[in-house]
Length: 154
Image (cartoon, rainbow, N blue to C red):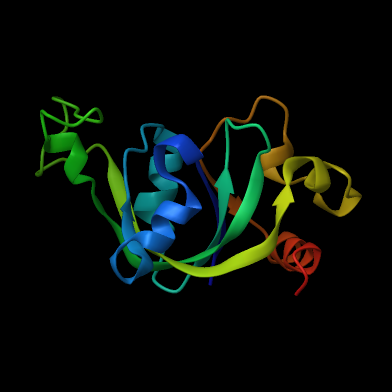
């Protein structure tokens, strides 16, 4: 099993939106960074777990956990000319972008804020906390996962 952190701006698609989705499940699409794409395409597997992180907001925080329910597949938004994520250079025979399906697993009673994460030396190597990191999809180590879960009260 792999562990991940997926970022989303709550004004675009927040954890509450996921909870209100049918079966609390949705497609995680629109990723347009090659390194993040490679994770989605090559590394994500059903039953992997991820933190759902609210970014670019007043209080960035991990809101809860999600489960990967479908491994990487071509992102249909890349082929849709009406989508803001449309990419005319991507095609079904040679897709450039990938998506996964996710399902809400657990809502944290108290979100784990970015400020809280930064206070712990045990998390200093976490990609999210590296200066200049803007990836919306990052791996999380087992040790980091367990530590953050303990911060969330587990």
